[in-house]
Every structure is written in structure tokens, then in C-alpha cells.
Length: 239
Image (cartoon, rainbow, N blue to C red; front, top):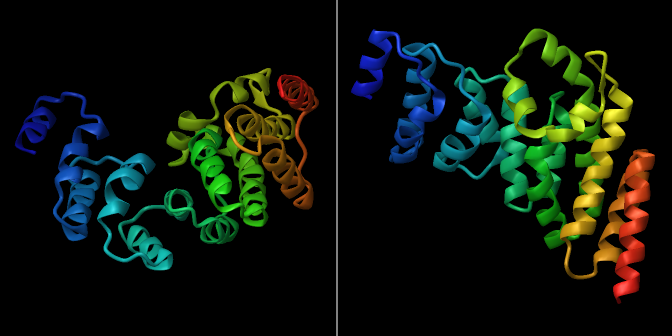
């Protein structure tokens, strides 16, 4: 900490991950929140979602999601960032019902790249396709926030950079995000992830995932649908 203070005095650039060892070594949630407060007040830095997800939430003693949410919000973190972090934590614990409830209650951009792997793992473990569909609906609706986020450089920018990957570039024309195309591409990317990464009962899982999307009124892009069909044909041929 003293080194970081010296760096601040000299005008050296300080990045948030410099504080991660401090957060990781915090002995309890009180100390973790004290470090968060120090980052925002003394160093004038906005707390990133990754810092909260990886280093703060694991220090919180309560396992009640509402209490976790309230504690994070009390530290001055936006509702959008808090909902993203707490829902991610719930998914990592295979609690898709809680994640769906949190995501549905707050309007936020929910980074596809952030959620794709843990969500696929969770639904494959729990077979909770109903709440998987609700989560996908929240991710789908959150994409509508992208143009506003990019224009305002809001606190959700970190999540955008972290997760859209190549899908965003494909959906941008003349500097503008074509929301509907981006939404269908993202939905399709989740389905393709299942086709590529599920090892057991692949076709059954993918069909259930597709049914959950249809139940929520969601669709995938034509390009992704064609890729899905090709993957299915290849799978059936090899079997």
C-alpha cells in the first residue's frame, strides 16, 4: 500500500489490478470493504466488476444473495454492476433460479463472454432449463444498453470490453451497433458453445437449450443456425 501511495505522489499510472493482492489478503469482509473504500476515495478509482466478483464477494460472510447485494450497493457500487456480480456468483454456485431473479429485477448489460462458460456448466449440471431461459432473456435484453454504454462511457464499460468478443465487431456497421443482429448472434453463440463443449447427451442438452430460448421468445441468427445444423450432422455421422 505504501508503494502505491508513493506511485500516486509521482504521478505514475496505477491500475486496479495492483490492488488485487491487498484484496486477496483481506482477512474478512470488513477489511475487504475498507480496501474498496480506499481505492475509491484515496486513489479516486471506480471499483471494477472483476475486483468485486473475484475478491470482494468471496469475503462476504453471508450466503444470502439479497444481503450480498445490499452490502455491495452500500459501498457505492451501481445497481447494474452489483446485479452482474451477484448473479455471476449465483451461477458459479449452480443457483440459476437466484441468478435469474436478480437479472430480471435490474436493467444491466450482462456480458456474454463473462457468462457463457459458467452458465453452460451450471445448466449442464442442474438441468434447470427454465431458469436458463430466463437468464438468456435478461442477457438478450441487456444488449440494448450497449449503444448508451458506449456513448456515455458508463461504469459498465469494463463488462463490455470483457465479454462481447468478436460477436460485437460482426454486428457493428458504420460505427453503430445493430442491436437485433447482435442479440441473435449472441444467442446463437451460447447454443454453439453447447454443441462444441457438451460431451454427454449433447443433442438432448442442445435441444433443451433451444426449447428454453423459444419459450422466452428468443431466436438465433441464420448463420448460427446453419453452423448448428452442420455440427449436428457431423455429430450424427461420427456416431
